[in-house]
Length: 304
Image (cartoon, rainbow, N blue to C red; front, side):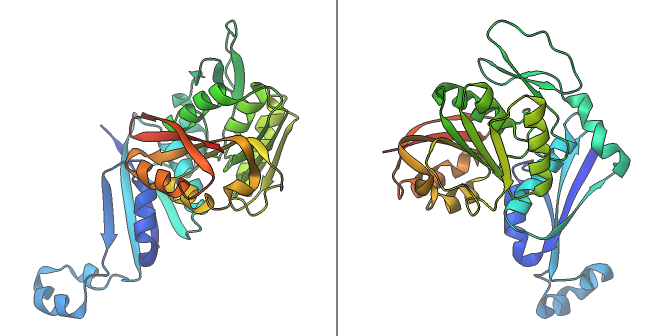
């Protein structure tokens, strides 16, 4: 079986954060960190260490994951880029054994219509689909933004949006990516949706996807988490990001909520669930429920 290597090179001080994000793609990490090769170590074990390791830059490190050809390398890559950008980490990302010209289109062979909830069916923009009774078709071309609908985190959120959204409600989507959650909310009856992402490319793609689905009630803009969010109280808030960022933004979330507002948080590894719950206990939001799938968790809260 062939494998593709996704390698992230970063400053040594950012290594732990990069590893945390990379572990969301795969638990088998290859870490290249030579900062522990101090002078004492080198003096004692110099004969046992390769010269290139002795000369390696101690201020930089690298983390790699290896993905089998049966998996969607490109979606993992887009996920990785978005999450690292959201953490504000400067790094270099490369895919080894895949040529640049193949990245943009090769992932499409993995992407087919997906039933994301009871009603929402995510259909690639280039495919046809025979709609069944009561289904809502969400056309999607994620381009270079995360959010094709195949990842557990996206499907888990859409299922919860279906449960909790009511007609004519206002929605806030933090870290919108491809715009997939905003479009789902719009199709399910939201009166207006404000969607934000730190990546201008994601904002452009989300706007295009909203237009493709005829969702003129979706407003998309650039924002670093809640910094540029329109100051109003929303009926439903969703964030498919990562645990660290959800914890970070939890302190300010109440400013955009009112009594009864539902907050759906996803992108959370199951082992980080309790950390998110602990952070949210310090806010006016109360725990409602959570659902897990393949090591990922979505948690629902309500402002009271």
